Length: 521
Image (cartoon, rainbow, N blue to C red; front, side, top):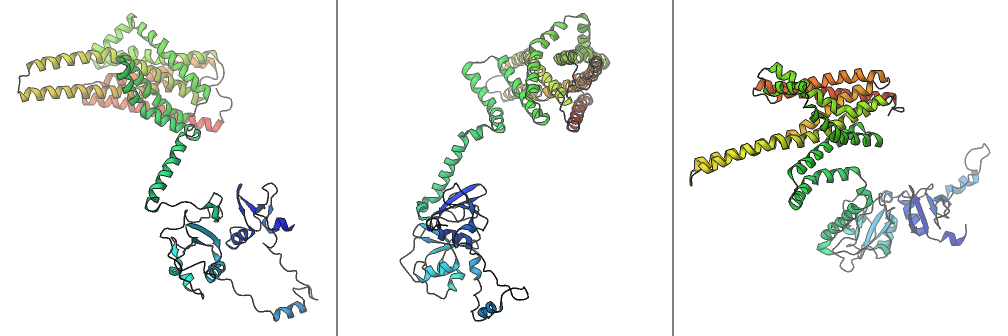
């Protein structure tokens, strides 16, 4: 290797990262501190790389032994010569780690213990000089470090040392900048700010975080978009309602869509549908709202359904109400929800993945729940608000000036109306969409399971509709019961519905994992 190369500055490559340039002296210091091995890649031009053992004088080759007559070790002459050589001094234990020292406001190093001793002899390391190695918790004056107090050279007292620590953080084996091997050149000195240093550091961290926030890397994360979207949508809706004076049915529609999408995102994370499956689910949810709901409303004109609805809403007998809710409410609603999926399965003779069937059923159920929430608000809650308003107005007129009893009664009624409306809307927007999705999801599983043979689709739909209609009718019959026992039955039917759906979902996930899901829709 030429003299020019031997005296050149070197670059070091470690784990794909390039550091440097370093002088030969710095390479030697890195070798002594075990930061550089013979196999470490080095280069002078960052194009052609070789092992560090090729650097002249850095890793001297061992002396070749002269074989003896018996083929062993060194020759007698060599051994005789070695007998007159003084034994090499044992390595100092302090040389096992690298030292760093401060020079003004700059950080120097790494140097070996022997080099630090030489610096002390030369008067460059004084009693007040701040030093550090990996065994020390913090930068400390040289005179207070035990290893340096044991030096057999005096530590000269020089000018008063700076009150601040050398600029920059402690050297680390994990450095990833140009001083990634614990080296920091004089050209990398940083400015210090005295007592303001912590505040400056915090501000710099804040700037770094702000840059990361606006970077494309963070905004590409799906979790970031979901958290911001779901967390701030209600706040945005409040502002939009005030600014644009949105009508009540629009506000309720947006709230219904918000909670339905929340559940859809939850099950999306579990079922992990493909893009086409997700898109088809959204399309069918829209079809349920635009076509299914009008068909359901039109069916109310049928005399059979009118009779069943009358039993469900007016009959004092539990059995009549159960029959009315099951076949007058549950069965038509469940059929309307899975109608797009049912027609799709009839038109194709390809196996539908059970996970896809569940997700499509869920999507149809959420679409139906949004439309029903808006309809129920406009139809039922509007009338309840009117009755409550009339009651409050009558009581307000009867309240005399300074009548604390009547004022307390009026306040209590206001709170009852508000709390009842709040609980009702929470149930309508959170729990009922989940139940509707669970019932239609069960139907989706039956359809997907029978999709191998188009002749089995209709029986599967019938079985699924009967099962979900019974669950639906049981819930509607007892959920609004005046007795505690009746409400307990309604709650139990909701729990059973969710358990059935979750069992089918777990089965679909297990089947998909076992079969590979390669030929499924």
